[in-house]
Length: 278
View 1: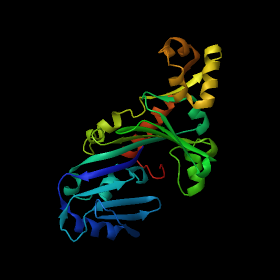
View 2: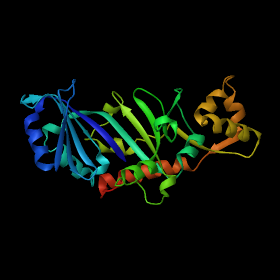
View 3: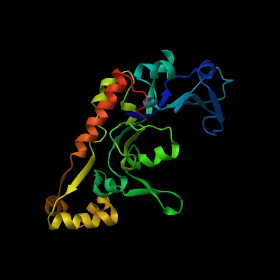
View 4: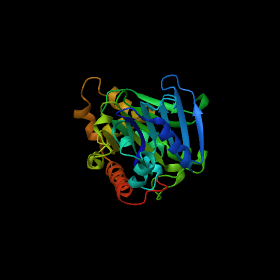
């Protein structure tokens, strides 16, 4: 699914008219100060469905503006476009950020144990206050980042949030989110959905199953302590990991599940009724 999307208008637009339109269709709105944009307004359209408008104060008839939204909260692509970008003028711009996300029926702790990403960046862990509850971890920085977090925990906290799939135990549900920002994000276009559909955001993610041999046992022990991504790096100090430890694991079927679920979510969003998938 497309979980988040930031869209910057290519030209200055009639901000006042767009603001009035969002005010008309929303059930409530909230203004927040923003020193960079001048004005940030969050328009709530319904349960879990919001549009955030960042712009100069609306006293300026035409001004630069950016829209932040969650496409997966809309029934489908047609409703998303007609609601968030209602005119031809508002559809001329570029994507500044796009987040692809899919849920897997696997506990976060196990995903941490068995997952690596083809980046050299360090793993960053997220925990609740005082470090009591492991909430998630991320790998990568700048324009391309992969985030893994406990979707079941989020559902329990927020109550109304719905996962992207129904065949799950809420305690064993993790979300895999690929965040693309800046120049890489601008390569996508709302006018060319085929490129979005054909793109595999999870191509650099590897989930493994450990094998029952000395290499697999050592690799699993190290992964229990550090997570697979860091363990792989520590065991590769002599650049010998591929030769030795590749004999200790195999590619998990979860990699295929991840991509298939993602394609199914996108197909539903672009061709059918997507409501409740976020």
